[in-house]
Length: 496
Image (cartoon, rainbow, N blue to C red; front, top):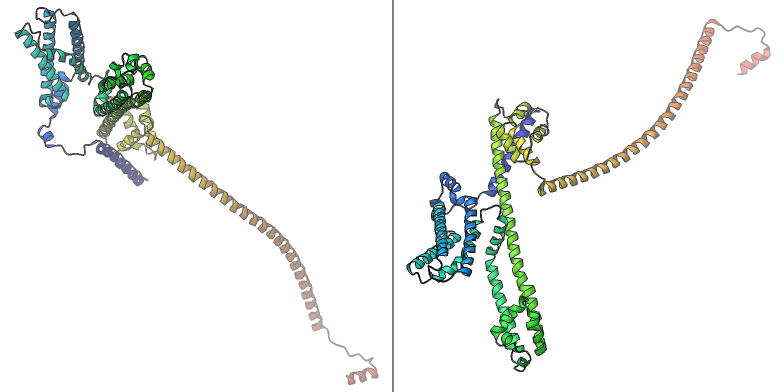
């Protein structure tokens, strides 16, 4: 029994270690690091510095996002209420814009210090840098030439600073859903460009057809005086197709007059609506939604992988803690030792992170102790934790269903076997009944034979007694001559 218990524990330990190894192997990078990665490898100290850096703080990114929104609002107010392009006419807005430029320049310095040479790899960083450079160029031009009103290109590009909010919300958990939508739109830009190209081709074809069918009849323009504006040329017809595709007042301004002067153009309008509005635009929306769904699924997959890696690490650390608290060093933990170990604060916290209470852990000890020896190994306990933690997975449910089906099949086979054995037992019972009847008849025959044997024995005894009597008489009785015989008797004897 002890050898069987040791063998079972060794097998359980091997299974647990294999599961941990599979988890590590599943999430390990299969590719070797490149030469660039090897030359620019980061130490643990460098990674810790980046994690603690100001540029990696969520509140810093949120603050920059708020500043960007305020800057955009100020630009709109300046556009509406500015009194001129000269510096003295917009001095207040110039001072505010200078403060914003200093703020954004400080942000660039912080991010360069945070990322180092990797700052130039991210396109968002290049975009930020260009906007900051254009902003300071606008400030310098405004200061050097007070009557120029600044660099007009830089002034127009200031509105694109709001796009920087996208990179600022990337690390904020509260705005994670907004970042998923924006990332989905950015990742599907190639499809958007191809769909836009296809729409341009369709609009060109429909516009040319509409121009031929409705724009060649000059007498039609006498009834529809706006016809030259909508179908006077291919370019104007293309803009009309775009208006119809977007349902921008197309019925009153385009459809009804065109149906009256050029009925043959009716199929072109309806075909444009079905192809562009119900086809191409819906395909564009579907592609974006599909991309967002893929990104969401990837985020969930990465989160699940991170959770599995963390659980594997925690389970390994728990095995080490259990071995470290094994006082006798036997590799087996008794129930008394186990109750003390699981109440260690560090181990309690780890069990809590796994969603397992102390009571569940104690009950698991009794379940894992199958031979009632009162001890379990740390590997057995960890393997049991992996079975009960969290909700049941699909694989576990499939295994349970398969096990239940196998048991059902085995039960059905046992039922058939029991039925067959019942039939055999019934046959045996019938044969036993016939054998009992035969034995009863044989018993009666034996009784009769015994009676006959007694009678024969009695008769033989009487015969033997009779023979003894006759023999005794023969020995004691002699023959006597009879004198009274006659002459005739003598003659008869002589003849004989």
